[in-house]
Image (cartoon, rainbow, N blue to C red):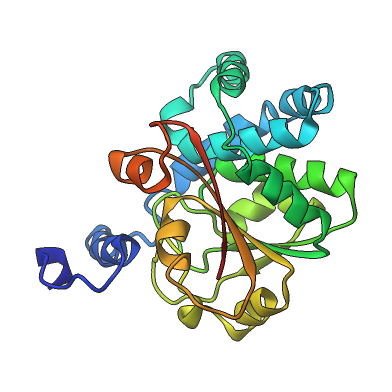
Length: 255
């Protein structure tokens, strides 16, 4: 019924989940986008050292790493087979992006008072830039990061396999969300008790991407601060956040 527009009480991520179940069943393939994810991760890892140097030598490493982290949310439109071209594209993108002030400063303030951060990852490729962001923060101060990934493959979303491939464990613990089903988002009541406890005990939750925003922003769990990082990819987001198309969104709220 929800696919026919008869149910309006579910999120778009849940609709995608229903569609993806059908795709996996008829293709007899549990992870149809596996090769795409591998390629995305390899391409970004290929320029990781160069991007790391860009961050380190910038006037504001936090702001530069944050921009790259959010740029990752539009990876599908940027990825090229040429590493040099990809790196140059990233550099140009950094200069054209304008972080929403004072939201980015509020995020920094939250991080400066946080010891435990739960980071909900989004897509492959993007996860490499998330790693750079987390690494930059850990060099600024001691923070314990937990990176939550999908338990089941869905679209190009990050699973533990992707997280391990890009060695995110160097900067954060890896935990699967425990959700049964290919949901490209985060619904806490469907997550494992481990993830729910991690969120409840966290000083801050950082959520990447539209799917996580559309689902996690509907949650209500205590008074945990949550910051959503994504790109204003469409008119709906542009109007919702008052942001021009293709610009970064830093949205701070309390779950």
